[in-house]
Image (cartoon, rainbow, N blue to C red):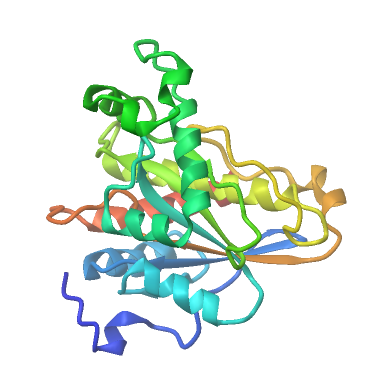
Length: 272
C-alpha cells in the first residue's frame, strides 16, 4: 500500500479535514473527504477530480477511521456522513465494518435491518425469516449479497453519535457489471443523493429530529431539485462526506479505478 503511518506527508495534504466546498443548493454546501490506505487510490483521485472539473476534495492516505476522528476533533459543528462499502446482507465482515459496529452499534443495526428487509429476490425466504442474521444459512446470506448489490442505506441517526451518520453502499461482493469503475461511480452518486435527501428533509434545527434511513435505493439518479425543499431549511447548512475506495480489497490489481469511479460519481451527481 506504500502507507507509512509515521510519514505525515503521505497521510494528508491538508491541515484540517476540509477540501473545497461543493455548492449543492443555495442553502447547502458539501465537503468531500477521500481517505484510503492505498497510494494509487489517492493518486487517482488527485488526477481525476481536477480532470473532471470538480472542486478539490480533501485527500488522505490513511485509514478512513483517521479522517473520521479528525472530523470529530475539528469542533466545527459540521454534520459528517460516512459513506462506506458494506456487504449486501448487512453483515460486518471487514475490519472497518467491525470497528464501525463497535463505535456505532445502533446505526449499524439500522443498516443491517434495512439490508435484510429490502431485497426483492423472488427466491428468498419470507421477510420474517430475515430478522436475525444468525438464523440465515450461508446460501441465504449469499443470495442477499447478490440481490442487494449496488443498494444504498442511510442509518437511523442517534442523539449519542456526535453528528455522525453512516451511509452504507452494498459494494461487496465485487461487482463488474457493466464495469467495476461504473459500479463504484453509481453507488457514490446514489449515496450522495441519499445524503442530500436526508439533509434537505431536516428542519432548521440541523438534524435534531430523527428520520428514517433510505429504502435501499439502487444506484441511480442525480441530486434533488432544491427548489421543492427550501421551505424546510431556513439557513445555510454545511455537511462533510467521508468515504474511501468503495469495494476495494487487499490485492486488487487496479486500485486506480476507485478514484476515477468516485470522481465520476460526484460529477454525475452534480450534473444530475
